[in-house]
Image (cartoon, rainbow, N blue to C red; front, side):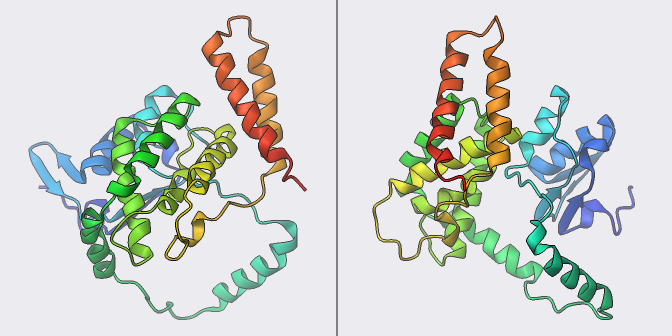
Length: 263
């Protein structure tokens, strides 16, 4: 019998730091934990109570063998340093944390999260099924890999957005979570633009819409420059086929639409 006291198989919240530096045996064992919430060792099988897995890494996966693991993480967020004009506030906040002698009060309990998760399957997503399918197809056509597994699992995240707005039915505004399903950094602007276009086509009342559904922040000129450089490099390839060239033209079109918002 494996002693799992105080370890991952008994955790409610799991943070996997420097995930991609783990060896292949650990990564393979995580696949079942991430997808089925099951811990298996020999003949021993145990259901995991984990409510959420969060992974962190200083690099994106480059080895194709890590593709299955990366696919299990539905949302991807790039955490950069704050702008220089905000650094003063960060230093003050960090120093206040260092001076704290007591743990901060808990405002959300594990039971609260479990209650919310049990309500997720009861959210009605029928009204946004068509725009969601349209978005998935457009993303796939643009070269953003959205597996069937992720397309199914992402419905839970969309439903969670509706719940946090106090609704039991999904709205197009709840598709804002799709901005964070990119595969590589160069896709961030493209994915964001496509999601915003689908949300913008919803002309219904804005009352009850998720606050994050409003058009995202102005485009990052450095990210756009990297994207253009990557497109230019790929266009130089002699073996570039017509479908791939059409995909690159679509990416340039998206960048052309957003460049007017660069300060």
